[in-house]
Image 1 (cartoon, rainbow, N blue to C red):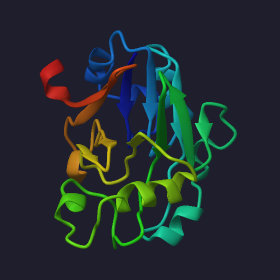
Image 2 (image 1 turned 135 degrees about the horizontal axis):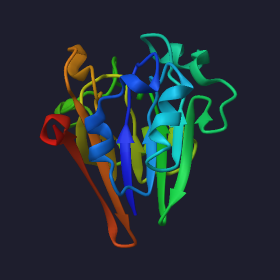
Image 3 (image 1 turned 30 degrees about the vertical axis):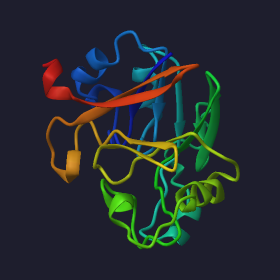
Length: 196
């Protein structure tokens, strides 16, 4: 199964999504939106390519803030309140906007887990299980606007960045593709400028 991953579109309507997103997602079976949606019209536009599942954006800068839910798509059946767990092709996928893990003082950015000298084997999987209240194989998240694909404690972490605000700069950005099979999972970040 081929899954398109997008986050932090932060658009006021579906027409603001860069057309390169639709080219990058050609042929995907499902699109997962990891929050920062701002309007359900974005989901409507993406749904013309493939079915969409999403999570709402969390507000606040600290883990406690994760309890505040932006009303951007409240009531939309495609959007889970704060997080969602999907079982696809035998993989447990945790979908969330802001990924805050205990023992980290900020969001998960590229390289942060790798550079942590205080982590022991199993710490990351334990922290992820605390967040999703069950074991997870793949974590898809957003909010930081920094794209990343990393594996820690056997868990694949994917943040697609933003299609129009990468690293908080207004320009063409990134999405990701997740390929799932019974044999495993593989993710790649795509540069949208390659689809211009």
